Length: 206
Image 1: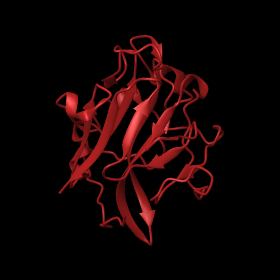
Image 2: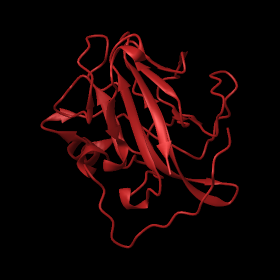
Image 3: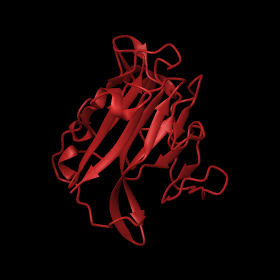
């Protein structure tokens, strides 16, 4: 499946929802490989892009102080190319959440992802944007992040998912995600978190 490339601007004054949730990594942070430009997702064949250096370990007193909420230390630190404002999103992004084993058994819960540039997913309702109340799901399990990346000399906006070293893992289209690495999300992708039966379908609309 091909992606439509388009230029992206950065407004002079931008508002980043829930900016206290995420801080920029320091230069001496642990780095993680980055996977982009699927499809299809191949955990063994994906190409690492060394330029991106996301980190979800606290680094220094400033990061520790700014990367917590309600006294809870957050695992995730946004990358340098994290999207700064939802106003830059020109498409509509959704998660359709099916809570039963069969999609035909229930109507999905529709979550509009354009409300924030990133969405923390997990069991802890105090800090997570999308809460999953299942014991197999970690308190801070995964994150969906909109990023402004360079592709063929063009600046484009793409959505990525990253498992935050969860205890029971994250699946993308029935393949287990590598932990601590961004993987590009494509229209129609199906996510599962932990050992739950719920399906989270990523959808893009013009």
